Length: 135
Image (cartoon, rainbow, N blue to C red; front, side):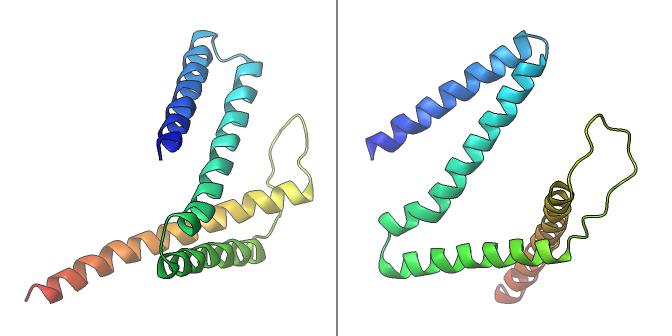
């Protein structure tokens, strides 16, 4: 398990260095693209860790539960993609986005809306359930 701790410290050190250089150089275009690329790398590491680590460090029941959760996330992403319109927004930009880019942006917005509603419902239902159980 120590290698996970060292990996965490390494990612933290790289992220801290990028943040310091980013703010130290005055937001140059190269640093903005570096920060965005690093955030994508961290997101991919996070998604892979969330999907794979429970399979290695849990019992069979825990692995089954984590795969069900990953399946729910995949279903939410597919439903969000289906509901996304992909219609362009009137804006003055230097480079016009492609139809697939617009569809992915709309998918992200719909998915964010779904997750917000789910989070609010979970918070409300958790409070109601705990108040019923405490009676």
